[in-house]
Image (cartoon, rainbow, N blue to C red):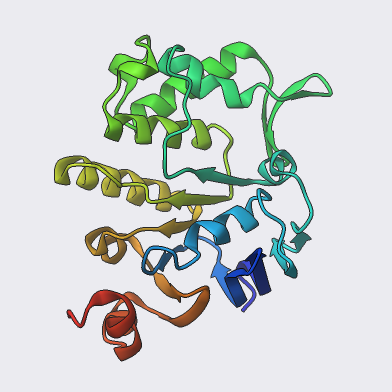
Length: 252
């Protein structure tokens, strides 16, 4: 397919005697939401860490839009257009929400505030305007001058998402984006991620909440014991006997 944007080819990763990933192959189409599900300890977060350069695979290659990511540093991968939202929000609690969202944009090179290889802003005023617009998108603009540490867990997750959005990533990786949220906050986050999808951004989501997965995903891959055991549309994965046995507990 011509619209494949991310390729993981034969990824293997071990920690001592523990094999975290074994012969993982994954292809993600541009503009889609691709969910990765599986039980705890399946290797899902390790897989994301390999994608963003926090871990180097023992064997295999990661390619994004034809560029080799394997061996690159996380900041280099971010400038190519790949961003990640972590399982535990990584924010600056003593800074305001506005300062948190503006901060990632301040990577200055050749006289311009560069977001990534494809997008840049020319001034601090433009960055502030962009940050305010993003905070409005994620539903936090009214609190933009408050300290980030005062936010609820759900709002911290949305703030971190805003910190990624100002980078204008082409690929956004989300690790348990609704973990610990109430159903109300979860549904707000689903609506926000649908809005992002309408703008053409490609997303990979690790998620345990099947309501979130089946609300957002175009494709689903199932990881168990470090290996992908099934993949396809949400409907196909829901009915796969291997998935029911390994993860969904036999539930339809």
